Image (cartoon, rainbow, N blue to C red; front, side, top):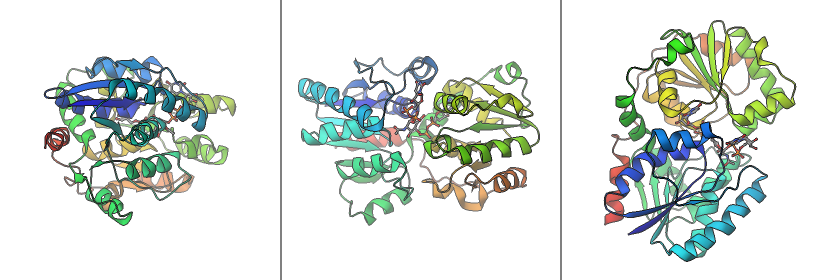
Length: 350
Ligand code: UD1
Ligand code: UDP
């Protein structure tokens, strides 16, 4: 079978690595990179490090408004699908690249495979929520990472083609943690195992709202100790436009975005993680590192059990309290058995 995969943003490269590896054992895969993420440390590094096959097509769409970015992808993906005539189109998650791929294929009656289907924040102001609802509603096969995702789809009357296979990000963590030995990264950044906080912030609801951003940064000032923050280019640009100087925050080390293996090392050895990322919330759970989520809601509701993950929004007091809280959550196997990619390909085979 011939599968066209559409990728565009950092977390999609990471999710694609285990699936591509498995898919290519028995099927032909053509990769389209939309170019949504294009900096070397937001894109190339993942292809190299995770041995993801080089994209067959690179659309070079880059950054722009939602409509323009998604529209340009749609035009080019349609042309490629007409030429390649694949049996399936594969998309991951909830970015503009996901929606463009799904929409182009659905209009050409090419069955869409959606990996990480069924996630909901129930907040339609999030661009990701719009992208995933629309993608799920035009997908033929919906590979869910959790039972909650299956239930969410059922509530929208989507039951055909729905399978809980577990989370491909868990596959990726298990596979890559084995490779992640002898890392001198902590030394390089003068970090001590278990004695620093890891930060990531990139969600539009935070970066595009000055009040929320100020409240979050105030909490970083109030949290004592070493903090390391691989900063997303979106956030770097927004903070610079707001005239904010992160050097004023005591104990904070701002670094460029890191590769996946380095990120796993930073996560595993952190005392706690403060993030608004979807993927990082889950990885914190996989690594059994307590997480403080700088959002008002989460799609990954399972991680909240036993306060393994605490939702604090952009409330300075709540953030500081959650970071300083002593916790010993009971972690469970909620995201499958690390064989999600295998199960997805087995379904395709059937
Ligand atoms: C996108 C996804 C989001 C996902 C995130 C993963 C959408 C709507 N959002 O958000 O769901 O969580 O990727 O990281 O699809 N930029 C660069 N270099 C890059 C990429 C981006 O400088 O390589 C800057 C540009 O200023 C750009 C901004 O980041 O305007 C935002 O990039 P964009 O891809 O539009 O959205 P993300 O915030 O990255
Ligand atoms: N990540 C990374 N380097 C970084 C920050 C994040 O490799 O500097 C990885 C992280 O480990 C996770 C994924 O990127 O696997 C999460 O992507 P992101 O936070 O950009 O998007 P989201 O998951 O919120 O959509």
